[in-house]
Length: 94
Image (tube, one colour):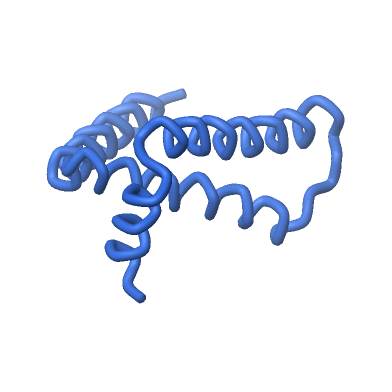
């Protein structure tokens, strides 16, 4: 089954609110892991980190599809990357 179909079925089965809550939960889990890595100097395996990132990415893709904003998100990603390039160029002299 393709991603788009999986996301569509998840939305149809659970609806909007549960998907929002799931996205919040997954982002919080990634946030907690990153905080533990920094504050507690805890060693985290690449597997742990990749699982949390994958969960967040899946939910972000799902929300993007659910709201039919794939093109808009892609445009905003490009805009944000251009800003990052600008920051990198500004900081060359530091």
